[in-house]
Length: 398
Image (cartoon, rainbow, N blue to C red; front, side, top):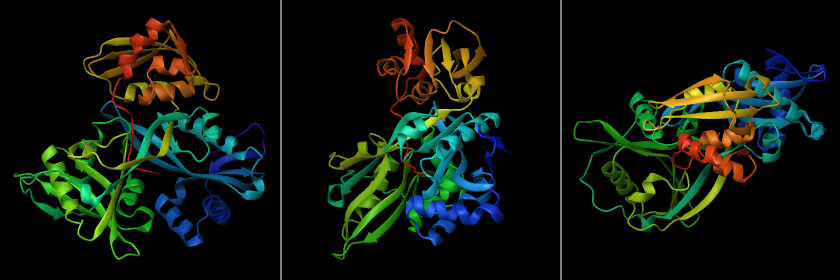
C-alpha cells in the first residue's frame, strides 16, 4: 500500500527488503547508537514485513516499525498500532521526512480501521504536531532488597513457569484489564518480557490450593563489581493479595546476595501497596502517547463504568484525518459506548485533547484547563464521569 505525500515523488510504502534493508539498518544504527548485529536481531523480532519506509524518488529516506497489539481501557482491549524505530538518515534530517512519514502512518492506520496508534517519543514536539498527546506514564521503582517486608504468607507453592504457556498470558490479561493503559501484548512484547535488551528473565508463579495460577514474576539477576547482584523484573502480576505477598517473599529470598530490586509500573504499582514500609525510589522514566486514528472505532471499543448512563456531545477537529472531524454523540450505557455522527457539539477538542481524555490522563475539565478542550463548565464537568478511572500506566516499553 502506498500513500503519497503532497510532494508526488515522496511515498510511504511497505518495506521492500531487497531495496530497503541495508538503508534501514544504517538509519537505525545512527538513530539509536546500536551495533548492526543488534539492529538485525531487533528487526527479526519485529518482523521485516511490519516495517514501513518513506521513499523519496525511490530512495529510502525514513523508516518505522509497526507493532500490532492492543491496550486496555475501561476493562476492554482496544486494538492499538504501536510505533517504534522511527529513524531518518543523518544526512536527511531537518528535511521534514519524519513528519511526513508520521502523517502518512496515521492516515494509513485510519484507513485500516485501527482505533489507536501509540508510541514512546524521543521528541514530543514532532508527535504532538500530528495529533499524539501524553496519555500515561511508566515509572521505574528501585527498592533496597533489605526493605522488602511483605509480611507473613500461607506458604503457597512457587514453581518455575514456561514463559510461552497460555496460563501465563491469561494471568496477565486478567490483571491488565483491571487498569487503564496496560498493553494487550502480542508476540513482540512477550519476547521483550522474556529477554528485554537480550537479558533473559525467568518466570516463577504462585498457585492457589486448586492449582490455578494466581500470579507470577519474571526475574533476572545482574552481578555487580562488588560480587553482589541487582534483581530486575520484567513483569510482576498477581490476582490476590495473598499471591502478591507470596511473590514478594520469593523476591526477598534473593536478598542474601542482592542489593537492589528494580521494576516498572505507573505512579504506583499495586504490588507496592503490599509492602509494610513504602521505602523505595521512583523515577518517571517515560510518558507514552496515543493518537485516536479512528474516532468511532476507538470510542466504541473501550469500556466504560457500568454504573454510568450518559451522552457526551463532542465536536472534533482533526486536520489530518478529515473523516474524524465533525460532531459526534457518544451514548454510554451498560458499560458500552455507541457513537453516531451529529449532536450538539458541547465539548470541542482536537486530536490531542481527545487522546488525553480517551486514556483518562485528563478529564474533559482538566483538558480545558490546559487548552486542549473547550466547552461550558457544566458540560465539561458532566462528561468527566464518562472517562473516569485510575491514572493510566503501563509497565512495558516498545
